[in-house]
Image: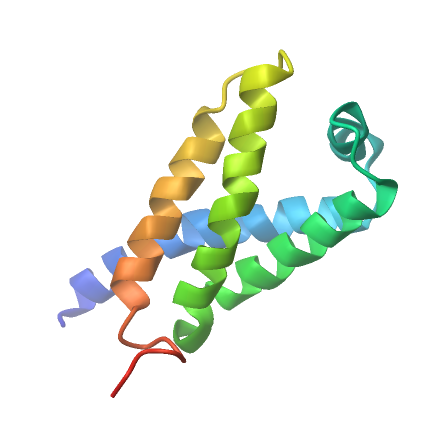
Length: 120
């Protein structure tokens, strides 16, 4: 693969990984606005921290080719939940969550052969 293709293949992973690291870190830090959404949906308080830990771990894994596809697979249900919240709880656009789902699918397709579960 040429250098340009290699760099371009990483751009969507960075666009997915960095926001997940930031969002996950903020949830783990206990930012009240981020935890309010979980209580609005009737979820327990610890759930926001769990989602934060998952987002942080997945964001970091975006930069480790062997774990990228697995992390992206785990992020899809989280992003579906985020899109659901935005649609049904009068919060602005679910578009970012939908874009993240598309980036997750890209990451899975791109890194599936590097994945730890991929048969040899």
